[in-house]
Image 1 (cartoon, rainbow, N blue to C red):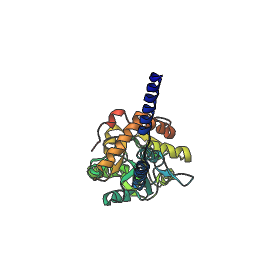
Image 2: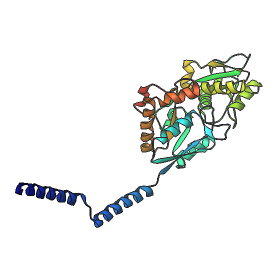
Image 3: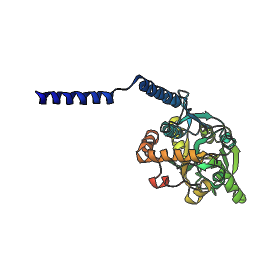
Length: 297
């Protein structure tokens, strides 16, 4: 009987000890709730940083306004996907004139330029470039049935039409500077690619120099009476130092570029870039994984 009493006493003692450890005083409960409330309030007051990007909303299919009056395109979709993975930021994309993108980046109005930018040394000295997200190729475009143009030399004396500041127009300007005896006439316009193709078709101008995917997209939609020819290797360097497209940043946005680049590499590795390319072009348009190791500038 004494033995049973001792056992009972031990059990009761352990129960009291456990109960004592498990119970929280009203003061402690209130303190814990206060800490949790303060933590929640602190998280809710942390502001998400707005990142502003600028685009000219052309050329299609890279950046354009769709039939639903919403901005879309290959470049735009990739950029939005990047910022979906950067919850500390809220992305806002504004439509502006092409040349205004550069001025707005320099002034600090925009944090990112998105317009299928290729790389050249002059632009690279003023802006930071992301990892590439697309392989780009240009073609000469002439009226169907006309004498084809297959090089800058063959285009000498003929009239090219394009917007100021875009890589293809800059290439023609560079050619003229280096080859004054074989100069190409330039007609600058404010219109988009559709206008250029219309003028080539009706004979108002002799030729255009257009991105291949862009040319194919417009041809499929509007069936212009035009023809295209590849740019020879010796002329490709005049157009761009390489065949890739990039996002560009002001010089003081190194940290933002690094964050965007980290996600771009993720999108390449997990196949998201390939999926977006297939959606827009029927194939993966992204560069090889080796291009996501080091920035170009």
